[in-house]
Length: 188
Image: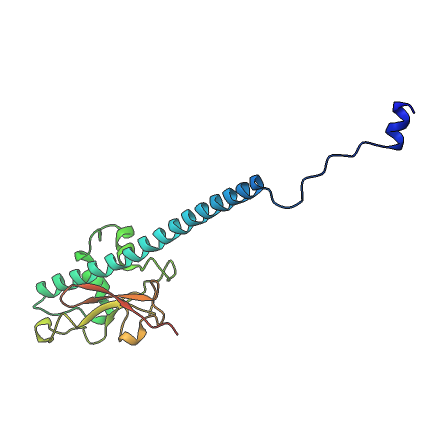
């Protein structure tokens, strides 16, 4: 029998194929890709979370400026708070950057959850025209707060606060003694 006949009649067995499925190298490559994807998604989440926190911090700052401006206004006006229908207009000279339209609108505009031409803050309906010296417990008297009333110079009671909170289930409230705090809202 010749070599050719032997090769045709009795072909050499082919080396066995490696078993199908995952090899160690494939598993490491897939794990590495998953890790890269997780790092990217985590970084993206933090960018968005920081942007939200910055906007929420802007609201906190705005209310701090407003309650401070209301205190200065009252001090210069015989300890009397402004009328409700013009309260934002009355405190504008005491708010930082009030001389520029951009600064004024930014100071009175909640950066989260309201439209571009809406405001989102309200003065406590019990405050307009009152003498500050006649208000008991100024550290508990809510003066300005996040509100669902979106017009300029809005005033109302705290029932107009967003029910779910405008800032991650919280609202910002400012008190007569000029301190500001976050108020957690219940989520139904």
